[in-house]
Length: 413
Image 1 (cartoon, rainbow, N blue to C red):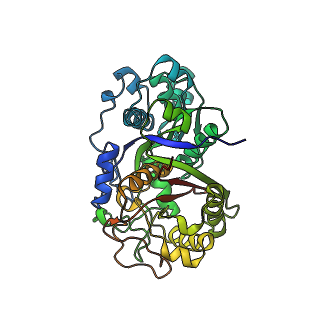
Image 2: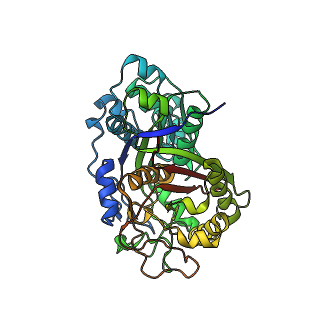
Image 3: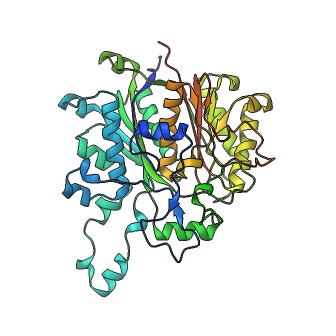
């Protein structure tokens, strides 16, 4: 039995360089840097004092005040991006459509923001803890808050697979439609982890950049010889996925086709990446899409700017593509501009992948001043590139070994 073709008909985003998808995209092409001093908390005593924060965000523009107060920042971002994605897809929800539409979101949730609730329970009594901890901070509310705000009654799930979460969520929504469990889904990722505990623990792990606190615009430098870790980001990206039949039945404009996805697990280390594991997700995505490596127009790299990841991803691309195609296909990392938004990173990259196909442009890797000799692929330094972008492969690799790769292609009826 032929499975339905799955298409993308809408996109939404909120990011450190733009609070909507189009502002985000034009900022990417301009090489705009969204990294700056942390303002969401006092970071004076921290060894890391920079992040990619979303700016000028008022959740009450998209949610009622009471619901906004009951929602953590990650859910607020998700609702904003989801509403924009529906507008992008020219969808006006009615009872029948809302009953069928589902939502799948990737996130780490707000677990770090629960504060000293255990101490409150012990010292002041169990009746004094925050009764809204679970509905406010639980990972399930990434999709749950969107579903409630929009009245969606289709499948509703949140996925947490570290930095692969957003790409995972989009992939599982794709499977829902291909397997006939839904005709239309909202999918993506949302994250708000610029928090003192997160910054402190990731700094102690050695994952974050510490050498550019005084020059934050230079801190996120994927594939550069002088990179020293990633910069934490935040935001949300959401896509509207539909079966071809559903999209055409409502006269939707199709932005791209979702032709393949691959998953793998490193099974090696809790933190260090593995080239073979990463290559497997790409190879499986190519097999799923039924395309050869030389058919890929752009690799939207995971590109975190940690010394290990960038070398490992370079090796993995060569393993999955073969050296000839690996050197031919351009790749770049938008994390150089927005930082690493963890569970939302792959969703933001998916939005950019659709836009790259639409506009035939590849965003740059900024701060790539001195290429690492071990990262010797065409990583599109400094400036955006005009190119025929028919097919995009986008990688997301989670700390812990979760690997997820999606492939979008220009729509061909």
